[in-house]
Amino acid sequence: MSAVEKFMPLLNEAEEENVTPTPCFTHEGINYLYIRHHNLYLLSLTKRNTNATEILLFMHKLVQVLTEYFKTLEEESIRDNFVIIYELLDEMMDFGYPQTTETKILQEYITQESHKLEVQARPPMAVTNAVSWRSEGIRYRKNEVFLDVVESVNLMVNAAGNVIRSEILGAVKMKCYLSGMPELRLGLNDKVMFETTGRTSRGKSIEMEDVKFHQCVRLSRFENDRTISFIPPDGEFELMSYRLNTAVKPLIWVECLIESHSGSRLEYMVKAKGQFKRRSTANNVEILIPVPEDADTPRFRTSTGTVQYAPEKSAIIWKIKQFGGGKEFMMRAELNLPSVKGEQVETKKRPVEIKFEIPYFTTSGIQVRYLKIIEPKLNYQALPWVRYITQSGEVTLRIADNPASASAASSIVPRLLRLLRHSNNAIAAYYQAIQKP
Figure 1: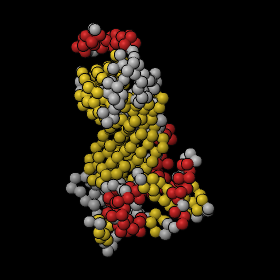
Figure 2: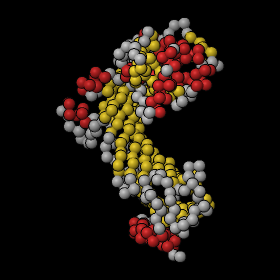
Figure 3: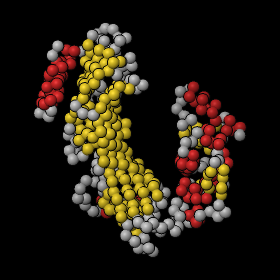
C-alpha cells in the first residue's frame, strides 16, 4: 500500500518538471504500469520483469468490461458496485494470469441487479472450453451475418490549401446470428496476400498497417497465408481494425472568404464542393465555421441546407442533409461586431471543421472478396450482408489568419462567380447583386 500511495506524487512530480509521464516507470525497484480513463487511474504493480503489454491490455479489457456492466465508469459507479467489481476481478484473473475477459461470457454467470450480485453455481462451458468467447448450444431460426467496413478519415489542410496530414482508420465490425460453432473465413483485397500467394488482383489492392484482431482470429493462419479465419462470438463485436497512412484528398472541400466592413461588421462567403464520386451521397454534413466570440445579430442566406449560429462554440454551423458527389453549394453570413473598432479584425486561428458520413463508399478502396461460413454439424445456409461506410474523423481546414479587406474580397468574388456561372445561375445572379453598393 505504501507503493500505491507514492503513485500520484510521482506523477505530479513528473508534470511539474515538464516530463511527459510514460505508461510504465520504475521507482525503488517497483514497476508501475497504469492507464487513465476519464478521471480514473488503473494501476498495476510488479517487482518482476513482466510483460508490460499484457498488463496494459488487461487493464484496457477491464475498463471495457466495467463500462459494459455499468454504462459509465467513474468514481461513483465504482463505489456503488464494489462487490460486483471484486467478483469480476476474481473471475478475470487468477494468481496474476488473465482468464475470462469476454463480457458476454461473464454476464452469463455474474449478473447485476440493484447493486446485488447473483452467481450461478456452475460457470458456463465457454469458460473451460478452448473457445472461451462463445457458448455452446446457440440456435437461431434464421442464420445471418452482418459485416460493416467503417473507415474514418483524419485530415488537416493548411491555409494555403495543402494537405499536411492525412490517414485512414478502418474497422471491420460484425453482427453474428449463427447457430452452433461455425467457422468463418474472410477474404480482403490485401496486397500482401496477393504477393505471398502469387495471385493477381483484378482491381485495386490495399496495404494495411497496424492491423489489430479480435482474440477469436487464428493469428498463425493469418501470418501463413493472410487468411482471416475465426469462430465468431455471438452478437456484435469488432473483428479487426487497421490504419492506412496514405495521401487522401478532402472529400468535401470548403473555401471561406471573410470580408470586413469598417471593423464593425463581418461578411462570410463560403463555398462547399463534394470531391467524391457523383453516384455517392454524403449524409448529415456539418460545416463548422469559427467566428469572433462577441459576434451577434447573425443573418444567413444559403442555396441549400440550414445555417445556425452557435454562440457557445463561437461558430456558424451549416448543415446539409444530403450532399451529392461533384455538387457545389454556397452560403453567405453577416455578423455584427459591437465591441470591435478599427479597420482590421483579429480572429483566433481556429480551423473550419467538417463532419459527414458517406454510405456504400470507402476511401481506401478496401473490398470484401468473400465471406465463407462453415458449420459441418448443422450444415445450414447462412446469409452474409456486407456494407461500406466512410465517415469523418478529425477533418480540419485552416483559413487565413485575418479577415480579408473589402478590396481584397472584390478580387476573389469575380472568381467565385466564374466558378458558379455554369453550375448555378441563380446564385451567380445573387452574388452579382451583393457586389452593388
